[in-house]
Image 1 (spheres, rainbow, N blue to C red):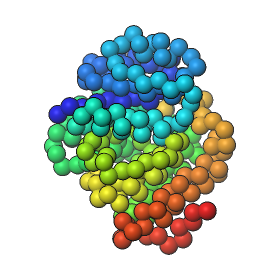
Image 2 (cartoon, helix red, strand yellow):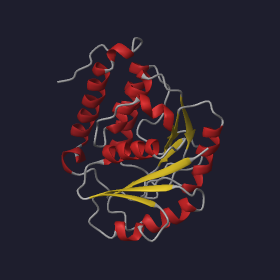
Image 3 (cartoon, rainbow, N blue to C red):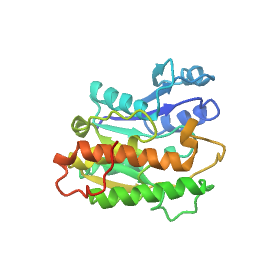
Image 4 (cartoon, rainbow, N blue to C red):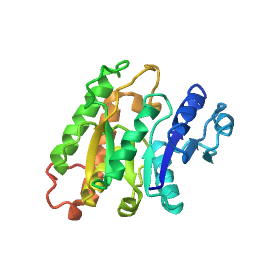
Length: 245
């Protein structure tokens, strides 16, 4: 089973050496997608035996995930694991994703920060936890899913299953589109626990999305528009009150 770990980065010079060192202890094939960093991140990445895709300008988290999907498919990998580079995702958890993938029962193995009995490290801002809970509940209600963490980027994907997805969302609302498309494609989804780690309260989304009300409205708009686009493939979905301007 050929497995690729893909790590989107944007100005992660503080963490990238530590993260890549720990990831490479556990898996050999690593792809770093640099989303237009303006610090030393690209130079630091080149110190390691990893593959680097470098973008000149910042295009967004969702675009980096699309690049990871495309790369994994083009290079013939069987599984793709995505994780962040800010030390909120523990490389020590990678083998658990690999083991779950080897079981052969699932197409998507999604990390959940709310299934782990261990004590969390740090605490996310209250608005982020609240928005996650609200959107996770709405996704479950509309798609009849049973997920507990809609926004965790620590995931494993069966690469062949990605053929059924047509993602277009470039930004942080990418998970909203992903869950709708995954449900419409009938992908088999499970969650495994990962630790909730939040060690940098100064991180922001940037621009208008720093406002929680604007961010929540944006997430809901992306979700609703994708529900409308996929309505024919979602006969059991709850589409009442879907609003897509």
